[in-house]
Amino acid sequence: MSTNDSSEILKSFLPEKSERPPSPAPLPGPHPAEDAELPHVVIEPKSQFRWINLREIWQYRELLYFLMWRDVKVRYKQTAVGVLWVILQPLLMMMIFSLFFGRLAGIGSDEGIPYALFAYAGLLPWTFFSTAVGLGANSLVNSSGLVTKIYFPRLIVPIAAVGAVLIDLAISLIVLAGLMVYWRIGLQTGLIMLPALIGLITILALGLGTLMSALNVKYRDIRIVLPFALQIWFFLSPIIYPLQMIPAKWRWAMALNPITGIAEGFRSALYRNTFDWQSLGISAAVALLLLACAIFVFRRMERQFADVI
Image (cartoon, rainbow, N blue to C red; front, side, top):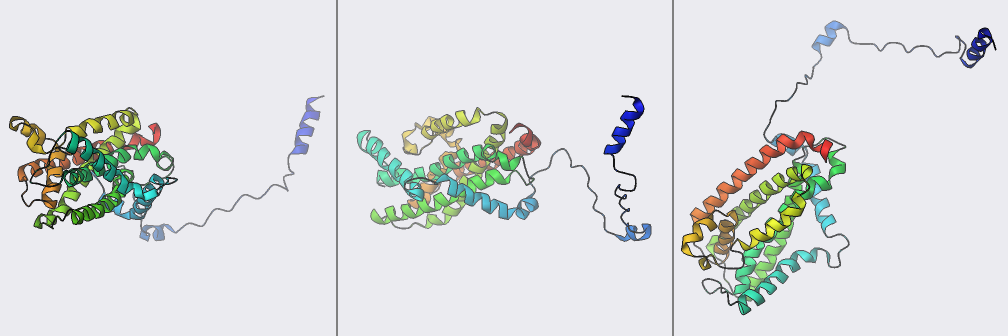
């Protein structure tokens, strides 16, 4: 086949010049004088580091509510008793600790409070704290499909995980009210401190949960180490034993544990009217410092989430 014959065959597959679609006409644009009057949006590169943008999080508040509701539904989906686990978990723990520590080990409470109530008042903030930290630490990894596809403030994910556990805490408080009625424990004026203590334990859980969520994206060891570390932390905190059991020379070390001031504060609000303000002040300082460090680390690592998650 000659070169002329090949060219003729290729031309047969090409549309005739008259059959080709006409080129699209250029879109009409504004006159230079009119363009100068139109509003312009200038996109500038962000600085190296920015603190939390509350306005942006408020704009995405509906997504925050959706994620909180999703976390609540997913946690108890396909469980036999559903949301009743919120009540059963602290109640069963209270019964077990009352049997082994209250009766067998002979560990008493302070100021004549039944040991079951004493333990439950400590388990209430601890259960919220440990659950919120655990869910917050895994929140980003569990939402990888969402993080890698659309833009939204990533900080919303651990906030939603911690916020969803607040519903469990509210239900557990109702159970505590029933227990106080059963043991005929009257209301104390210290109850006005309860919302502040709940806010304090929420800040502490949000700080640690946010920090662990950012680290867990890059270092998956976090999800293995964290439950073990929380178990050790539980026994180092005065949850199931009174602080008076610790020798006086070591109580300063216990005060550095932020859970100590909060757990003792819960008991003071519910059963006593005297607060250890120094211990509470240390807990508040540690919680706020931890939250600030967590936001700093989270914002520094945020740009890498979509690549390494």
